[in-house]
Each structure stands twice: as structure tokens, then as C-alpha cells.
Image (cartoon, rainbow over the protein chains, first blue to last red):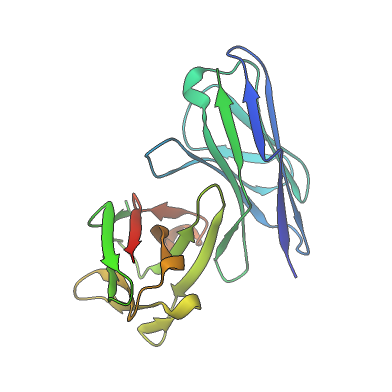
Length: 111
Length: 115
């Protein structure tokens, strides 16, 4: 069966510091992968998606970036965090039946 | 462009009462529709989905939803609420025009269950 992992689970970072969040999927090959963000009191915002290694599409311009160095690994990064980057970050993968399955999330607090 | 509207950001019901969470969508092509549930500080868990075929879809935890094309709706129901149903619920639509790659989510509905 497929599983999706995210780490770290929680992170507290100062403004201006770098960021790296990791997502890995097991039990499937060449999945579509997605990064979403939930800001406090708001819905889900799609940040990036990837249909394959090295292929990244950005939905919202901001100071975040994403990379997919391996088939089942998706990384969200920033060189300098802003206060507005605080939120709950969710990674998801899409199955062959067009269903997205979500990871447990990373709670990021920027102080 | 697709959109999803969830009427009521907060819904409160008594334990044992009917749960009805509303979702309306707009899509230029036949949609795939989803309901997800999110418990505090957790990821989204798939409750149920509609792709094709039977318009009444049954999911986990006793929930079901009915696809009504004429009303562009996909409301989520459960006959009898349990305390454990308290969570946030998201409706989403997948646009098949783009090969099903993208999900558009509604703003979410927080369900509160009173004892």
C-alpha cells in the first residue's frame, strides 16, 4: 500500500532563516506530487505541483520554491522566511484514479 | 475556471442529529468530486468521491453524498452525528479538462457536535 511521509512535523523558525520541508511517497511510481498551504483560518492553497522528476509548476508567486530530485521525493524550500509563511504545509500525491492523498502535514511557525 | 462553495463555515449539531454540509461547484466539464475530513493538526483524509456512475456515494464513518448535476451540488450527509465527527470538512472538484491534475477546494466547514 502507498504511504506518504512529511518531516518535520513541527518547525519554529526566525524571520529571514532558510526552510526545507521534505515529502516522500512509498509504494507508487511516478506520482503527481503537490504542496499546499493552510494559513490560519483559511482554506487550502495550492503552491506547487510536479508531474515528474525535475518538473515543477508554481501556482502562486512567492518566496518559496520546490524541487523534485527523485521520483518519490518532493521538497519545499525558502531562502528567507517571512512572517506570512507561517502555516500548515501539506504534501499530497495523486493516484491513477485521480484521487489525491495527503500527508500528515508540517506546522511551520515563523517568529 | 472551477470553483467550489461551501455554505456555512461553521455548522453545529447535537449528537445524534442529522449532519448536512453543503457544497456547490462550478465546472465546465463533468467533474470528479471529493469530500475530505481534517482533524486538528492532521492531514486531509478522503471521506468519499464521485467519479462516474451511481450518484449516491457512500464513504467512511457513515457519511454519504449525492451528486446532483442539475443543482451543481454535492452535499455531505450523515444520519446521526457522533462526537468524533467534530472536524473540518472540505469539498473539492477535480477538473478533467486538465487530465485530473488539479483539485479546487472549498473554504471548508467546521463541524461542531454538541453532547
